Length: 73
Image (cartoon, rainbow, N blue to C red; front, side, top):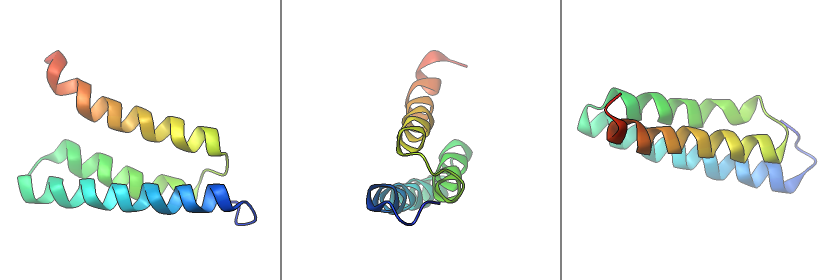
């Protein structure tokens, strides 16, 4: 993580808190998809230092969580 860039640091913190919320929701609902996405959103910001990649990955994870049940996959 690039600690010298405040935008990356604040984005990583926001995404981590969002992941925690999704993880807690998945735990309460016993939904393994939400648990997995929440855990991924909590962990992956530690390994990504690009702001664009950080938000693109977050969008892909949340988009997949939203769209996959509707596509009957």
